Image: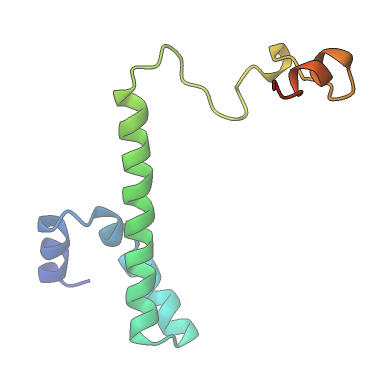
Length: 96
């Protein structure tokens, strides 16, 4: 990567593109991909990074008391409903 390109990516705050540029360039040269595919790969990496950053910002902004993921969420304490039980049958009836 040239010094000018590196500085432009920094100034434009395209940090993910800056981080994956050399790797993507080597892969593109090896696979002989087109220029548009190469640029699309760089833009895709930048877009994914922005989506992850936005999600992270929203989670921090929510001021949640605990940070849970799908793996750490306490599912064992959640009660599953049985659709064949009489109670659930009553709750599923429409009121006329």
